[in-house]
Amino acid sequence: MLRRAGPSLRHFLLEKNSSAGHSSCSREAKMSRPVQARRLEGIDKNIWVEFVKLAATYSKVNLGQGFPDFPAPDFLTEALTRALGGGNHMLHQYTRAFGHPPLVKVLAQFFEKLLGRDLDPMTNVMVTVGAYQALFCCFQALVDEGDEVIIIEPFFDCYEPMVKMAGGTPVFVPLRPNPPKDGKLMSSADWQLDPAELASKFSERTKAIVLNSPNNPLGKVFSRGELGLIAELCVKHDVLCISDEVYEWLVYDGKQHIRIGHYGLWWTESSHVPLMQPERSMLSSAIGVSLLSLPASLQGMWDRTVIIGSAGKTFSATGWKVGWVVGPDRLLQHLRTVHQNSVYHCATIAQEAVAQGFQRELMLYGKPESYFVQLPKELQQKRDWLVQSLDGVGMKPIIPEGTYFLVADISPFKSDVPDVPNSDEPYDSRFAKWMVKNKGLAAIPLSAFYSEAHKNNYTNFIRFCFAKEEATLKAASDILQKWKQEKTSL
Ligand code: PMP
Image 1: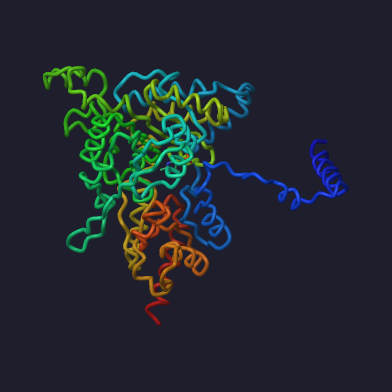
Image 2: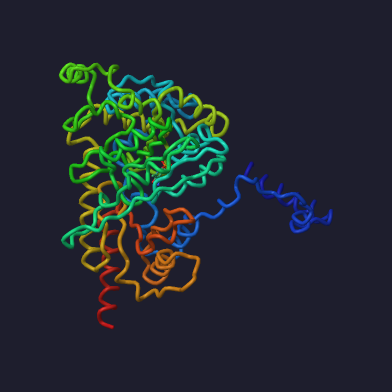
């Protein structure tokens, strides 16, 4: 019934307009004031719209946008099926606006383990529509007109427009590559912050810094030393830290993801695991200080950090769009205000299934059967496979320490896509477009992860996503090999 009502209503309106002599054109012409809100100026173009469309139109193999093409784990999809058909019809209704109680409770339990501190599920955790909405809430709630927000380049591209929409000014600081010695392949660890340059970006106008470790697109996992430096600067200048940790479980080669919100509880270089309460007490007596008597600079980060996570990345289910924020109530209370006045609520049933996923992971914490242990193992193999095949054709990869992205140097293939002098479009962007149209392989140009002012700084790189089935990676490798052979036989 409702379906049939749609077209007839449209028909009625069309007839009404045409009988009154209106056309959509004349209606547009009558608008004398600007339609677009000022806050959207300069942020209306988005590279993803273009590249997602190109991939959909031309790609035979899509290693562009970041999502797995393998299934989400059975325990998660089974949890969803149970939630759907398990007889609790209330799971189809609204739940608590700031997070379904079972999900915020288990997230609090989980993060208590990771952060070594007690958490209140109702005030220290908020569930969002993906990490994307978590970021939006942070910028809207914490950034004012005139505030500066430091963003480390290259960066997940939505940070810049979100800061601008909140009225803030993004201030960029680059990770600078140091060429590796002895002809070795570069690692994401070779891209580093210059401490003096970073320090020079902090001022009395700085409200926050955005940290993304492991970093999209490079896969850099920030070291304890680098995080310590950022933490010291945040404390010194009274700056907040928006810590985007969506790839927290995707770290390789035995590396550890270190949480900046945990800073102050790191204690010693040798404590590679988060410390639980009894261990903390033992350690405090061993080093002869209680936690509270530590210098303020070593206590400061929890109070000024919001930690952002994503079930999409954590459980290989990006389409579910369940994310969260963990942090002190003094910050989260303002995020709740934005959430309740914008999105208000996330799908109950997806939250229920993610809660069950976390309950399983809590039980299996650190064990070999844990998904958070298995997934990085599998992804590391995929990474190594793609590294080898890119290296084999001369597209030198930068080995990522984390995430499921890999950036590669396209220099040896440049002769196929000649440079256009004075073009406003960065070379890597034209290269990626040419590659998908002519070779059927989709990737994302690295310049998409730089600000407008710096988009021409590194234009020899493209980003691949390796969270893909073996067959997909093999198909990508076949395309590259064939291309290489065509080049050498010329
Ligand atoms: N942060 C980073 C660094 C990301 O790469 C992404 C997704 N590509 C997000 C946030 C958004 O995550 P979600 O899909 O959960 O909204």
